[in-house]
Image 1 (cartoon, rainbow, N blue to C red):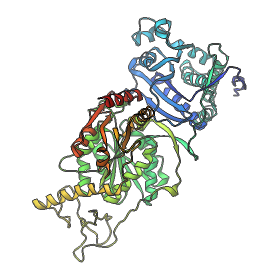
Image 2: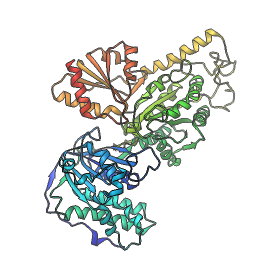
Image 3: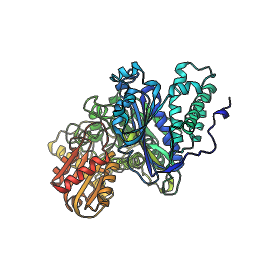
Image 4: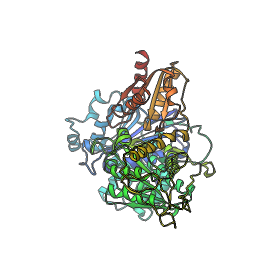
Length: 625
């Protein structure tokens, strides 16, 4: 069915005001399609050439009661004509689909910002669910600081899809596309990518294709035709380095990076995992990459997942598992077995709010101690941390490279903010990627005494023999082994020796990783040290301090165990060291213990990322004290 009668006008006589960057938040009930609306706006902006950063925010409950405060789902994005590192502090345009969404999100809308509310949803029962005793849209004191647009989205959406045979429920599910179309008009976006997506997604159901396209165009037309909107805005493309780009989330980038690692190593990848928020999408993405030598296994529990990975590593495959804090805790004994057997594997920890079940859909950095120390015995493991969604692609390969080169399990840390957030990602040239060299011995190294599984090279790395190779029969397991035969040993001196060797091998990785770089002066008043998903907010805050003439530098760590070999010298080149973390001070404590530096922390555990203004204020306080 044609929709030409719904097409937006070809020209618009309302003035277009240029702006450099915009922060939009879509929020509504979990069933209102806010994640979809935000994702589509992100895709359109990325296709236009803007730099984009996103922050999805959804409830942990599978389906909280409709209209309740607990059931609000939101999607924030910042799109810009220049480089950005965060999804923004204050919201420029807030789309609130019901009273609960308004109540939980209005505080983040900046003074003078645009508030678009679905007026139809502000009826008595929804107001009661949001604990309002009156309609806040009628309260002059509440809405006076904002440019309020009360739009009857539900009614207008029903009118747009009338005649398609949809039920009222089906019609109402299209109102997210009405809201999306309205915001497309407001920010002069071309809806073509979204229209193409709708046709591909709902192609088997022509009525749904037609309904969503009608709703989208109805929202666009409403912005054009209503007198309430007197101006709309345009954000020019960003000056990004030339190349091919796509939008990517952290979990997608991890999956692509791991599959790429397998291709670079010319071998197969095995992923064994158990579903857990917010790591599950890694399994989902990898399961789509079977044609690239990827095997995925959804285990019955976390223990089965880690032991399957140990078995795959023993068999000669690149082996990976992923989880979040609760699952990593359950994998602890298996990870220790990986350390004792010295098998290469990657363990990804997508951190979330804790402890216990904690805040499953919120971000945190509280598992650093868990990855450093969370196993029985002296059990050293290299620890890496990605800094952004796109960086997950590179760090997945780096983690696998170190695991294979040094025959050890490797931890790779991300968090919910990185995992679900998205940004434009420049698709790399395969020729520019570093190879991963897998070496399996083909003959015995024992000079007639059989194969010696713990005979090490100059880096203390043992050989990776594939089971079934004639003459390379050997024993591995969780009991302490004799060096180099692999026989079970309870000799005290041998245990001391093997413990020392395992620790020295991990420490030696410092010689194989890059030296730490610093953004800003080589010495000065203040060094801000960060890690993980705080990168963007910290970098932006430091840039602002530098533009104000302050002597501030930024040191962002991607290698946390071992630290880069020049980190000690860097820390001692500044009068003060500030460590912002989304935990109670875990990296700060490790830096103080290892380098005896008087680092101070700035800590937040609210399930939300740092705001730039929080960090700029803390930098000012640190410089003044």
